Length: 62
View 1: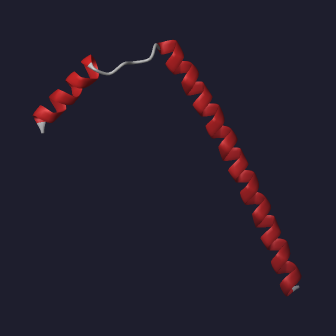
View 2 (view 1 turned 60 degrees about the vertical axis):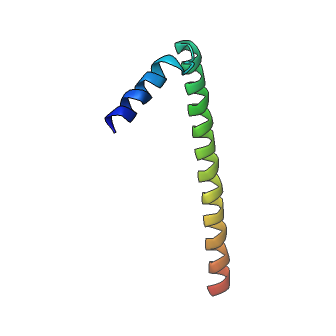
């Protein structure tokens, strides 16, 4: 297990191509913005369906 961890760290140091810090920061912001937008869209659709189902059952029962 120790050998595996050492080899993994060596791989990360020598063979992985890392982005520049500025590019990584820009991509992080883009991912964060799209994640927030997707969460808001999901919340909106969920709220809409919840209201529609409530109206449906109120009409059906009431």
